[in-house]
Length: 318
Picture 1 (cartoon, rainbow, N blue to C red):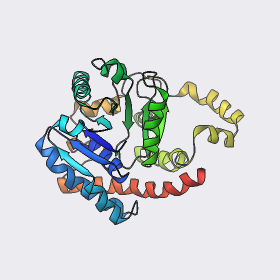
Picture 2 (tube, rainbow, N blue to C red):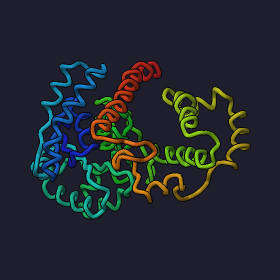
Picture 3 (tube, rainbow, N blue to C red):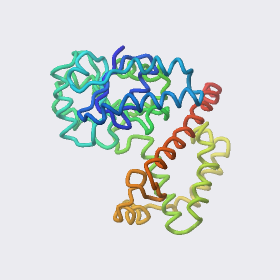
């Protein structure tokens, strides 16, 4: 596979474009909105520049990677010659079904289709595809920001022959991602399910005033998250003792939050129109566009520091 088409030039689409362009792929980036198309390359150039500045890769690579990206205003023109097509459009089932159906008619027979969905079922999205194309379609779920978070979850639900799946898996490994093979179609795949379990307990602790919110987040950042950055649950359990962890589970699990709907700590803010960064207010306030630019830049720079550091411990783990 040499050419990638990305359908959607929003936050996730631009990040995925960076991923593949820095990996040496020719990238066709499509969006139906003129403003998104006009913003795409300048935004990508800025992100590549900051990544070079932070030591993620050399400055020369940033310049070369930008040359790999071409912006399109026509979806079929962007996708017709691509080997791998990934859609990053809104989470509307009918929209994704129609896009895949249109692609099926116009793309190469051996092109592989992917969706970055975080909530829709693969079988539903493939409803209008030919039987042969269904064998070449999967979910490739990124975390935001797509170009900085190493993970990408890949569905392996039985529709796709193993050799084609591993072709996609190897492609992602080659561009520096850490692909996760997901064998069963469950809501949230793997990483989001773990994340949801964590934030359900975090907001319960805040709601019940067990500690101040900043103290709870400090416990996350410098406790579990610090350790989880370099290892997984099985090794942590082995190091602490399976017998100890089993007893801890017996003592604590019955007391953990078990609600099945979102908590008032969030729903009250939603009702007030406080959606977070995009609305200017959430748990924090974002007063001006200048301030928002500074905050997002700082957020991404922290992740870049982590990305650079991770190259050392990931190689050591191998």
